[in-house]
Image 1 (cartoon, rainbow, N blue to C red):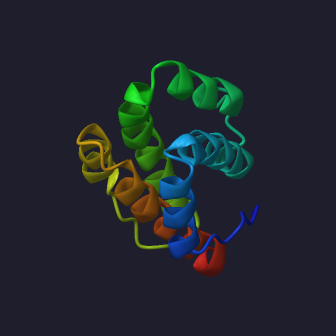
Image 2 (cartoon, one colour):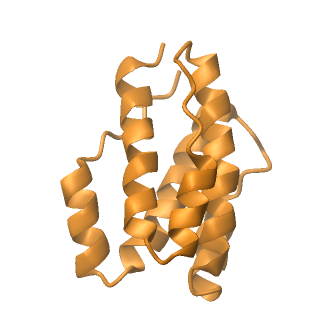
Length: 118
């Protein structure tokens, strides 16, 4: 199984705030790419996800959080982990302009997957 990059949450929050949110678009791209590697899903298009999030000024990110949160739950199941579905919570937080909070929740799940997933 592909092992993505473990990213410290404090550094993620720091970059998200320091870049005034531009780091978030990069993060969407890189997480889309990592989940594409894990799932081998040809329908996942990381460049499209990052660009459309940027062009819609983050509005698409709300949908992205929900969609990729569900993909992450499927990946957790395949890795024999207890699935934790925070997709709705992450989408709501992103919709309330608290994208860094949803980013950190999802990144924590990804970090656990990369460390504990089989």
